[in-house]
Image (cartoon, rainbow, N blue to C red):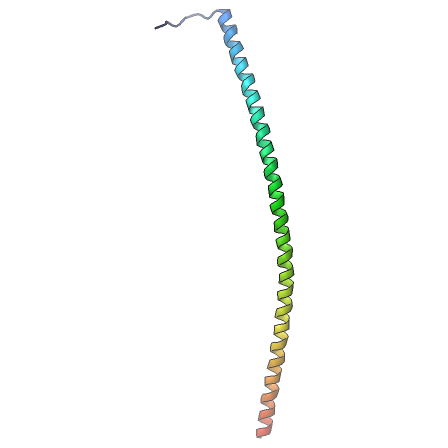
Length: 100
């Protein structure tokens, strides 16, 4: 087994420094590539979310129109119920008046 050297020569330190510097540059390049890929993916996701938002906006518009139609139907039904109630009350009053 090799024994550890106790002293590092300037040449070996320069070689280690070169290797560490090269590793740092490769890591920086790798991180830059990863960052660019992630940004591209996030941009695609943003575009997809924009399309989903547009679909939700269209759905909101449809629900608003449906809500307006339902309100009109409930108002019409309420008018009919009031009119029918008035007819029943008038019929009861007429029935009571004829019995007295």
